[in-house]
Image 1 (tube, rainbow, N blue to C red):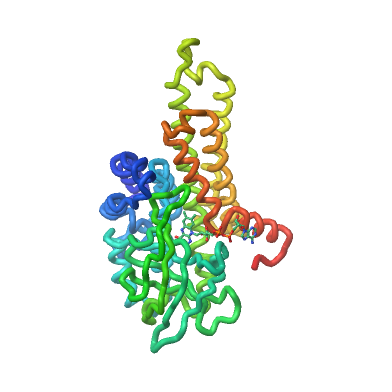
Image 2: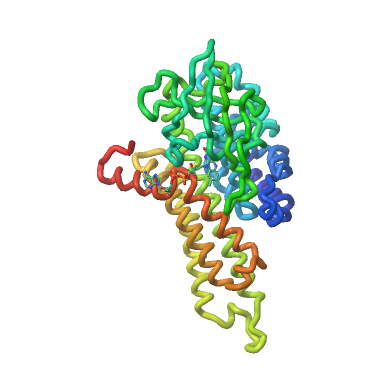
Length: 383
Ligand SMILES: Cc1cc2nc3c(=O)[nH]c(=O)nc-3n(C[C@H](O)[C@H](O)[C@H](O)COP(=O)(O)OP(=O)(O)OC[C@H]3O[C@@H](n4cnc5c(N)ncnc54)[C@H](O)[C@@H]3O)c2cc1C
C-alpha cells in the first residue's frame, strides 16, 4: 500500500464508519469495534510494520496524515489507532531473542486481526509513566507482574497490552522493562469503567495485573531497557500522533464553525452570522491561522524524524505541547464563536472541545514537556 492509498482508505473509513456514529458513541461512551474492524480490513493497523510481516512499511508522514484524518471524524477512534500503532512499533522493535514468540503476533497485526495498546501509566506514579512503581519478579524462565495500570486506551478491547514494570534487579526509578501480555493472560482484568470528559469512546479504563505470568519470549526489551525504548520508539510517534489528533480536532472545529457562520441567520437583518459580524470572521480567521500553524509544525517534525539531527528531540517535545494548546485554543474559540448553538450541543463543537482537553492531560503532559524543554535549554538533566 502506498502512502496516498493509506490516506484514501482512512478518508473512506472516516466518512463511512466514524462520522455517522461519533455523536452516539461519545454520548454512550461506546468503543467502536466496527471502526477497528474496518481499520484492520483496510490494512491500516499494519501501517508501519515491515512488508514481510504483512504490513505496509510506511513511515511517520503517512501515520500523521492518517491519524489526523481519523481524528477529524472521531478523535476517540484516532486515539485507539494511535495507541495501537505505538504498541505495534514497540513489539516490532523488540529484542531479537523474542522474535520466535512475537512473529505470529506481528503477522496477526499485519493481517488486521490484532489490536494492541500501551499500559504504562500506574496509579502510583501517575503521569510519570517513565517511572513504574510495579516490579517484575523472576519466575522460572519468565517473570510475574502485579500492577495497577491506571489508564489503558482500548482496555478490554485490545488483543494485547505492552506493559512496563521495574526490572527485577533494576536499581533506579527508570530501570524498567517492557513486556507483552495477551488479553487472555490469567490475572489481567479491566478494573473499572471509563467515563471521561472527552475521548469518551476510547475505553481508557484501568487494568489490574494480578500476579500475571509472562514467559521470557514475551519480554520485549532487555532488563532495564524499557526506558530507552519509551524515549526512542514511543515518544516520537506518540507526540507526533497526539499532535495529529489535535490537528484533526482543529480542522473539524474550523469546518463546523464556518458552516454555522454561513447557515445561522439574523432574520431581522437579512444576513448570516458570518456576513453580519466582523468579530466572528476574525475569530474564525484566528482559528484557521492556529490550525495551519500546527499543520506546519507537524510537517516540520515529520521532516526531523525522516532526517534525524540534533534538534529532533527538541521538536518532538515541542510538538505535543504546542498541539495541546492549539487544540484547546481553537475549540474554545469555536465554542465562543458558535455561542448558544455550541453550548446547547446542537453542533459537534462541544465534543471537539471536550476531546481537545485530553491531549494536554496525556503523558508526557503539556506541563511536563515545557519543564523538559526549559531544563534542556538550561543544560539541566531531565530526569
Ligand atoms: C484519554 C486518555 C487516555 C489515556 N490512555 C493511556 C494509555 O493508553 N496508556 C497509558 O499508559 N496511559 C494512558 N493515559 C494516562 C496519561 O498518559 C497520564 O498518565 C494520566 O492522564 C495521568 O494524569 P494525572 O492527572 O493523574 O497525572 P498527575 O501526575 O497527577 O498530574 C497532575 C498535574 O500535574 C502536572 N505535573 C505532573 N508532573 C509534573 C512535572 N514534573 N512538572 C510540571 N507539571 C507536572 C500535570 O501536567 C498535571 O497538570 C491516558 C489518559 C487519558 C486522559
